[in-house]
Length: 256
Length: 290
Image (cartoon, rainbow over the protein chains, first blue to last red):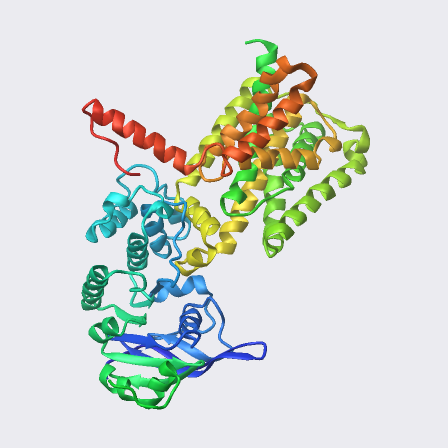
């Protein structure tokens, strides 16, 4: 066991009477690549939203490294090394690809002078250079000046990942990064995520593509009805009857 | 320059500043329909400082601007707890509150209006309008400007990447309020007479229209909107008594053809592409993406 980076402890989330996350604990080690699986409505995205602070937890705690971020405002969490992507791509549609990825660096700018830095003028601003380099590294610099809503789905997904990486995260939460991608794009994404992981970034990935998950991740956590029902290596998790039941809705073993 | 053109340019200059006052909160996704209230605060404070304390012109204008900005700061945080249509109603109510308050305030003449001792020349009003425009253009290109746009486009995503959405909105709102105050202060000093009834809901709606019709996606949109609204009724003078009917029709048609405003990003992109291809044809390297 390495050093724990993300420590979600006994987290519960209730909306009025409805419990959507029920006493879930997840510990992710630094540098680990972990997948979060589960049928639709199992609470995977909700768990991401609780970690990143879109919703406050009802009970339990979330720690990132040495810091307890449970009650930290959501906009402050990125400073502690947390960045994410979204299930339904949340880019700023009218803004260009470059402006979108510049948002990723937002928390790195100094409070007053950083905010008044005229970064959208000229080509020599250091933030802009860094953002363009980020786009260039994945071959997207040609789209820098185009409003993202005019770009194809696959490109937008990549831009979202570049934006998250420009926040210099320690932990990257990816919500269905491979959804809607063709096999070539999926392979490229896997290689890209492997490369990101080798730089020391910890990955927590929600994904339905089992091939993708099995190739990328050493560990799988399965949620169902807001509860954690499995946690272990891909091979181990695949054999668990409760996981099969969650996915197939039957306890009759199917062929592996 | 003829008196007519000069008079028109002064109106345009004041309208442009007021438009930027409405634009700043809108750039962050908030519609302020109380801009006339802030203009009134700017106008009356500047006039009062001028009449009662004989402050120099620059200081009274600064005073009016600051006063409106401070009210914007005080109002910003509580008001921005409301959203969408409720915020619009709250700002509308604020504007009316200021107007009816001034209407009953004897020290500034109440319903009789308030004459202003000092006069701001045509050149001063225009110079201030140009300076104000340049400041907003600069602000729009800063990281704060990016934060405003990001907030308008997707506040959750902006928040997740460290944009303090509430603060960005409050600051944009307060700066817009100050800008409205500046427009009011210049108005007071140029026309040498103000009355509370002038700063009514119709004025707020007009100013909001400059911005919405000009377009909120680019920083030059409000400039074009103010230009359109100020100049169009003049151009339609040939239509005599029908001119406001023609003008209203022009506004409706603009909204049908350009729902995102006269100037939007797509238009700017096309112009850039056109310039780029023209440059390529001439053997010059096209401009880099911004």
